[in-house]
Length: 151
Image (cartoon, rainbow, N blue to C red; front, side):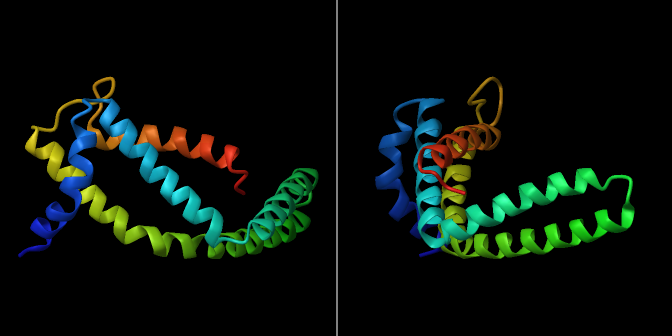
């Protein structure tokens, strides 16, 4: 049994009923579910208090950098501190990515196979399934982050 058939045997029973809803609603539903899952995982695998404080510190540093636009040396110092803060924030983001990366790769493989079998139809305003997914997930991500108070 190849990886593709194993993938199909696991995901077909779960996702086929959703795909019967019809487009663009099927992809909209799947995009929402994937985004919800990854957002919740992100919230509970990152230190939200730390992320909030770093975000606030970077905001203050950006304002400071604007004040020093005529003083390159001071601006470089502020940018260096801002870079260090951003790196700390990014390192926190890697943990949830490790949990979600492999499952999402499998889901995308299944979605690609599904839409290739359908002849790669246009899903949303003439866009392919991938571009439609990206747009849907960006909108859902913004809304869910605000709703769940994620930093």
